[in-house]
Image 1 (tube, rainbow, N blue to C red):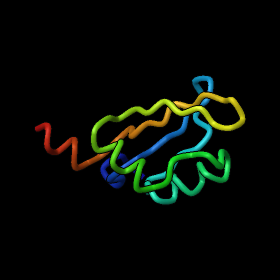
Image 2: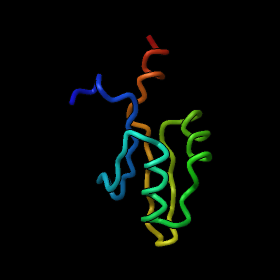
Image 3: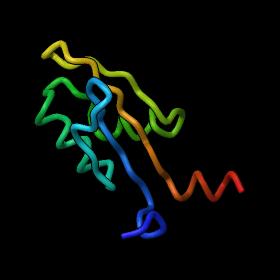
Image 4: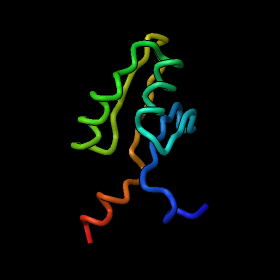
Length: 80
């Protein structure tokens, strides 16, 4: 699969390592909630990712994550 076949890519990074990724934000939010139950829900993440591509998040476990919208074909197309 090439990057052209992916329209979006989201990652959760912990200590500079990708611990979760998905090409679907709803699935990403659900998986993140399984790791950290206090994670923000899908709708909140969607609104936040519309404004910024990186979100810092601290889970109930005390672990600090960087959530990233690594690639969004629509935003990339808007830039050109």
